[in-house]
Picture 1: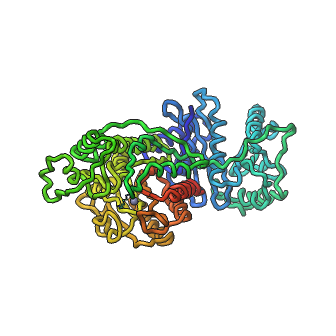
Picture 2: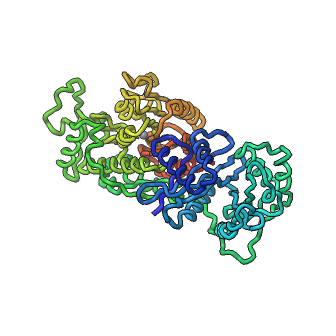
Picture 3: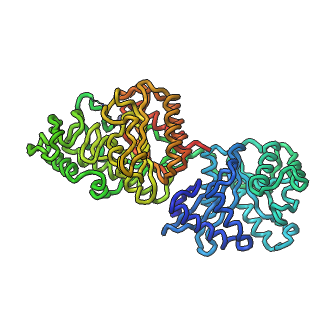
Length: 573
Ligand code: Q9C
Ligand code: ZN
């Protein structure tokens, strides 16, 4: 099985390790031009030009080692891309990697709305291969491979006939892959691309006497492609698959169903989100078990023990509603079991039922499965946790939450690098704030309705900035009821600026669709357009991102909001 990773930059240890393996494969595959290995690292680490968006697709084998790679240089302003290198490890006989990589390249570009892909293939005319005519046959086979995708060499220009500083005398065809599109390549577009290629990749002046005639030679409009003599099999259908997002779903959340009047945190919420994601091409993943240890890293043994024992004691029909709150006698938890509930809970509307503990554990497993995917190099994982978690504090549940799924995930990721936990639920994530309040390795940022007007009413103010070593590592954006897309995005942009300055390695996003217009617990007016914009801005951070489900109680908003957010997340070119 081959797995692909998409590197848009080099941020974390895993990226660096894989980049080094890519360079190693490069040097062995192209021994006559070893210096470009350094350039690959430069493209990825320094991103030296704003008009070139490099992507490295890395093929990862069974054992976790890199078995091949494709380096793509995207020219976002032109919507065209250049496939700079595609290579598989020449020393391991791993068949099929080249083809799979090429398909991954096309799929990525299609999902990003690219109009076409260009690349160089050495000449298949022995007469033009002065240095090594014997390679003509190999090159012919390579062109044959690309032809199956409708990728054909451009003919009738000087590009493949003129020695330049760019090709150093090795003449190549410029091949164009329309990515299944039917519109012919127009001459002005081709000239713009070739100009950009010389300038941005090779650093040559496209107006120079050496290059200008080549650019000008793209005169035929549409550009002529060398048509195959025999009919070729149909190119694979053009499908706009979205960037792979791993969605972790867990069925055990259904065990937690409080049929109380007004208890809007219901099992159908998960169904609504899944419905919204239908047809987007996301991958579904089942959760693994992680045990109690990661929960104990964030919550006290006393809370864990009480939730476990209280749940186990209850009959399927019973509920425990906290009624007394011994807040000023923390050293003495009530002995009476039911009365102890208020010692561990922040409100009166989040009861305990006989399966709450099991479901809450399953939600943590869901978040941690997503975390493991991110650790393994996935760009996006969406943990569809239920019950939610961000109101759960080290020693208290509440606000429909029992264990703090996002905080448990963030704590685990923090072992590998700096983490930002961004909370965009309508309600302030008092639990997440509290858990990391004295820590600098997890920056907590929250955008929410001002606590003067919304649950939890006691935290989420702008002057809560962290304490001790965590001073300056908590930031709150309390917004007014009625906040619309514009006001919301303004706050988000400010939050993202702050996050970029922190230079984190991972993002954990607590997402709540209760910011959308019409939520029964919310007061904001964010629309689906707003949700799409939020997704786009989050993706622009280019961080490995674990999305953790928090609130959102209108089924329509859960459905359309999730779809819009996901579309935005995966749509930026
Ligand atoms: N009947 C989350 O979104 N509102 N929690 C009070 C009482 C509660 C929201 C309703 C809002 C809690 C995870
Ligand atoms: Zn909420």
